[in-house]
Image (cartoon, rainbow, N blue to C red; front, side, top):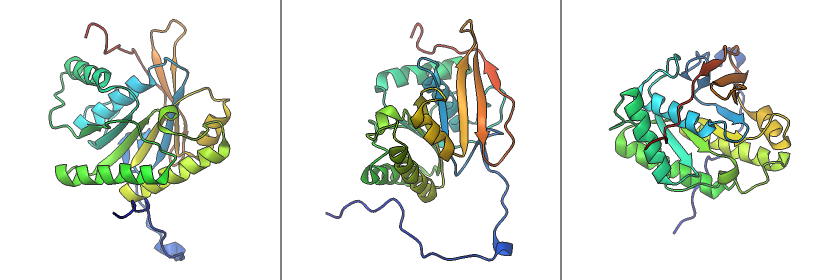
Length: 243
């Protein structure tokens, strides 16, 4: 049996005339926040509902439901989770009931188990699984969510070299599938691993809680190709309560 193919083959090195470079408008998945063909990180301290927000965003994209007032482009989402399926299933059911939106036939797909995003063969496996499912369903992939970095990465998240290796493999995945990759990371802005990741990504978002813990605020700290939008503030809902 053949070994898994590399995530992307090296193209012959060449130059293009400056005048021939295509000018394309930003292809927003989440208007003003997240664009296709990008690598982004969502960070914040522990127990700040980052996973819940990422699942909320994924459901909104898959069903073309505005995300807390922001327009979305309906997209197929592939969610790589480190949680058990039972809690994800309860959250999905509760999200559907709360928003009055049916998830049946929505192009939202959940992984069977975590993936090691620091090993090229594993990245190739992720790409192949997404390609096969996309061909079977007719839904081209647009977003891959990695929830979270710690549980989907065997490298040292505090090592700039290991983080750089992760970024290189993520970039290959983005190039092969023409997707955005959103990485969930628990940490503070001063942590070495997060600093190295933030330097490399196209988009960086912080999720914080108000002093009384009642409100969440999503702030864009870096958007490479557009101005930073105003923060989004909303009241979080624990979808697991009474379920």
